[in-house]
Image (cartoon, rainbow, N blue to C red; front, side, top):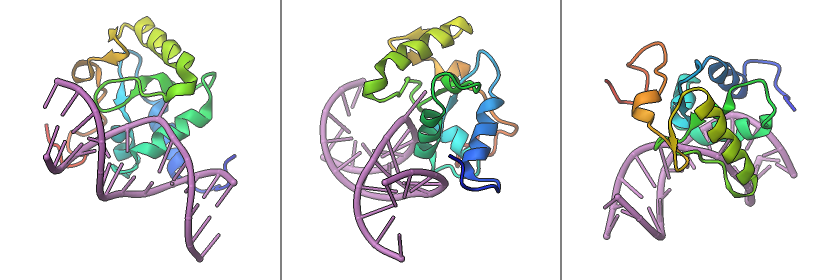
Length: 118
DNA sequence: TAAATGACAAGTG
DNA sequence: CCACTTGCCATTT
């Protein structure tokens, strides 16, 4: 449950994820960076996990920096679901991996992803 | 208040 | 390129 009525990191992350366009994906670290903390990639994963696979948010458009679907073990069925959802949006998924270099959604500016400048 | 947790990431050998 | 180690940080116990 949300115990902080103010703009929490969680709320911001939810906003970011909600803005990922169909057919695109974002890395956890990228979402964290967009939320203001490039180092808090792990929290992004935790938050998405708390949403549940039946959430309204496009949680399936978030993968790790290598383009792999990262869901940990026990929810192995969710991995299949995520892959299906991505494929349904036109994203090529091979062995639980997407071509992040091609499908990654870049936020507003190209200067705000860690120290990496395109 | 302190310790544990985790759908990550970058660095090292 | 692959396996292992270290750093990170919001949230929960």
